[in-house]
Amino acid sequence: MELPNNMTLQDINKKNEGTLMESLGIEYTFIGEGRVEATMPVDSRTMQPFGILHGGATIALAETICGVGSILLCEEDEVSRGMQVSANHVYAARSGYVKGIATLLHKGRSTHVWNIDVFTDDEKLVSSVRITNSIIKKK
Image (cartoon, rainbow, N blue to C red; front, side):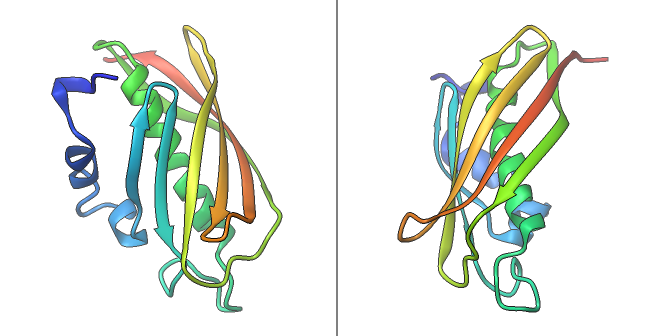
């Protein structure tokens, strides 16, 4: 897939500097048409006081990766905005990294629907997230 302005994975990761994504340690690891993957550490930045991964950090990872996925699918005169999120947290990650894998389920004219599964290092499912992005014309 050709990225806007021939951007590389490294270019997209560099755009995280000074943002929530940098604060949470999110790093993109794969970008393809209709699929985006990224990792996030399970550490003091992303954990609850109870020693497990915070659900909000998990949702931030999910929104981050499908947001980039939608931006990469938009036409030059379009932008993507988050519209709806639904998450099921099924396992408590306590250390290491989690990996989010976003898969495009629907690419419509005005919406993109993504499924994002988040896994531990040993491939246990942590969360399954469904996100709808609205596609609108730039102003």
